Structure formats: C-alpha cells, structure tokens
Image (cartoon, rainbow, N blue to C red):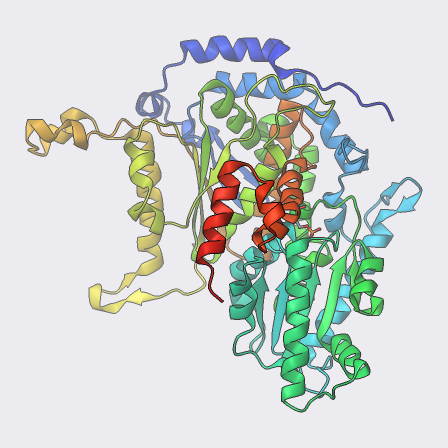
Length: 565
Ligand code: F6P
C-alpha cells in the first residue's frame, strides 16, 4: 500500500496562529486565577474515574482552542479511526496497530474484522486460555514436577515484556493472591537472574518466558540460565534424574512462554501447549494487556485483570468519541506539543503520589520515548520540528527531597503530571503525632507542590517574612511552572487500566502531530547488532580487539586487564 504523506503540522494555519499566540502570551497563573474564578472548573475534565485538572497549565482558552484546531488540521480524527479499525499505520513495519482490540469487551458489536480475520474472536480465545491457566496456577491444580503447587512465578522478559507486567504487579500489590509472588528478570547482567532466583524452591517455581519475538538476546540468555538453574536444583534435590527425558518433563511443568513466534518457543524446548500467543499488531510497549500480562493475571486473577482491561477500554472509547476539547488524552497530548514546540520544554516529569505506582515513570519511559524519539516522519522525510521529550520521574514525596529544587527554581521549563488517589491501600494513622491520617499528609504535599509551582512566592512575600535582603532572591519562587493533576478514587485495576491507556493515547496524539510512526523502534537495532559484533573482542580475541576504534579498544583493554573470575 502506498504510504501517505503526513500533514506537516508546521504548515497549518493553527501552527502559525499558535506561534503568534505564544509570542504575545505572558504566562500569569496568579493573575489568571485571580481574575477568573471559574478557570479551575472550566479547565477540568473527566475520563472514566480520572479527574484531570488542566488549569495549572500555561494556557488560556485561546491556547486550547488553537491546539484543538491543530489537531483538526493534522487529521487526528482520521488517524484515530485508522488505528482502531486496523489500518497498517505502523508503516515501517507494515503492521496494524491494534492494542485497543486487546481490551474490547467480549461480544462487542460490530465485531472487529481485519483482513478477513475476526480479531475479537482471536483475542477472546487467547484471553480464555490465559485465564484458564491463571486459574490453574492460582488454585494449585497446576503443579511442578514433584506435585507441589506454584508459589513463585518468575517473568523473564525485557522492555515491553517486562516493564508493563512489573509496573502493574507493583501497582496492584493489594490484589495479589496470598501465598503467590511474582519476580521479574530482565537485565542480561547475570546479577539479575542470580539474585532473582536466589533462595527460591525450584519445585514451586514457574518461569514465564515473555518475548514477542522470542529472539531477544537478554531474554533467551536469562531463560537458558533459569532452565539450567532449575535442572541443577531439581537434580540436587533428587527430584529429577540425569536424563534428557527428566529434564524435558521438568521444563514442561516449570516453563511456559508468551510470544508471537511459537515455532521459536518450541525450538527452545517449551511445549507449544504451554505457550500463549499474541499478534504482530501488538507493539511490545503496548502489550501488557495481551498474554504478556500472564504473570499479572496469575497474581491478581482473571477478574481483576478483566477489570483492568475494562479500564483501558473506557479510555479507548473516550479517545474515539469525545470531542477534542473534552478529550483528555487529546488535550494532554496537545499540551505536550505546546510545551515542546512552542515553549521549548525538553523534558516532562511524571510524579505519582502513590507508592504503588513507583514503576510507572519507568514504564512510561519506554512507552513515550521508544514511540516518539524519532527524527523522520512515517514517510521517511525528516521531521519538521522537535519531537519526543524526555519523560522521567519518581514517586512523591521522595522526589521532593531530590530533584524538585530544579523544577521549582531551575532555569528549565519542566511540565509535570501529578497523579494521586483519594483512598490509600493502607490507611495508617500516626497516633503519636496527634492521630494524623498519614495519607492526608501525603496528599497535602501533592496539593502544596502543584500550588507552589503554579503561584510561586514573590520577593515582597519573602521580605514580609523578615528575610534578610541578600537572601531574598534565593527564596523567591517565580511560579508559572505548569502541572496537570490527575486524581482517581483508588488505585483499582480499572483505574490502572485507565491511566495506562491515557498515556498510550497521549503518546499517539503527539506522534500524529509530528507525523511520525510511533509504533516502530529502529533506533534500538544498531546497538544490539554491535554488541554481538563486539562480543568476541570482550572475550579476549586479539584480532577483534584490534579492529575496534581507539576509544572502544581502550575500554575493552581496560576490562581485559582488570577482570577477575
Ligand atoms: O529492543 C527494543 C524491543 O524491541 C522493545 O520494543 C521490546 O519491548 C523489547 O525489545 C523486547 O522485545 P521482545 O518482547 O521481542 O523480547
């Protein structure tokens, strides 16, 4: 199919108007709130259970109007429709992009048929299989080779085959079945697998090898190391004999796989009957809600997993149907464009005030930066403006005692998303401090931070506190530091699904404005290839060492001179 040329956002009337608007706009959150008491209410939106206050952003109604016009003029509506109906919008890999199909409810009408294939039926069949397996493990009916039920699941995967599952497992910790634990191995640093399996009982451990391609060096290496560990420990415990047949039987009870490449799963020695599939139209970083989430489904159970999928779907429907000026992912994506392309922001902080979301920023880093860190558009032409900003973050309040200084008083503009829930998993009170509700204290920090960032503190206010004049400048806060506040009732599976889908679609919206293919990731390939080429040099092959550039050669020589085993 011929590749259509993206509309160049910078040539639109809306872009021209935004450029002029930016030159005239003097950000003044203090003034805007003082003269416009309805601002907060007018700039707050909801999607599903999420309450999203956009009012502390550096925008006026006119800014938002122009941003929505930009979305219209780059054809965002058509792109959304193209994605959800299964057009091959991942043009560089010639693939459809259908993660939204993974969370369509059973029996959705009309059914989603792509290239003659009933996608809904495929998704439901695989979900049913995954749920049945999860129930087997959770009930103890699935046993290891010595008949013992599974106590620990070890997910072996990297990138999208790790970050989503581990983030969601941590987020939904209160929903994890008692007596079950999931651990995650991702890094090819041997310390990762060694320390993850340390202390585990091989008889009660189940490994899930999660890899879309089943060709990823890290995952296959770790899977082989885990298999060797299993065989060795089972043999040492007298649970299996020293025969190939015994080892095959051990793998059959202690290894399952999740992949789109079931032939490679079989070649690794995992029975295809113990494999869960998905499809090339699910990008790795969009795959948590496919069978890549098997470890999560085991931990929290099919019902909670289903609630999470329903949360995703709520936001998918909102993306598709809400007018753009009410559409939360569209507005948040456009705000990011505003900050990157018109106000010069290079980074974006995501600050969850929910300890259970402590891996959410790491998860978002892959989602956003692997998607939108591109210099060419989907037709191969150079981008016409800056693209993907750097996403980063840590949970509050930890970040407050680390990097917030720079957000408050540094020279860089750093838009930040603050995320919190009203009801904590652990409603503890500090009796010794006057029976303080600790979660309330936590939320007071959230509200205080967004307030301080927006409104700052003037020199007059600092002086009025009796501050010595020479210290006044250091204690002034300029304010006008933009934030979006996202609140939800509680961190339920449904809310988690909504949050993830929200950021998936924010990322998509930005990619559409920039005209890039947000679903490929060619930028990770060169390093992978070079690592394999350099490996002989690192192993001491002098000829291979000599072929390296002087810097790389020097580094390898240092390594060779200092390694001890
Ligand atoms: O190297 C990048 C990447 O391809 C990611 O996009 C992907 O999530 C990760 O590697 C893991 O890939 P796989 O699931 O195929 O092992």
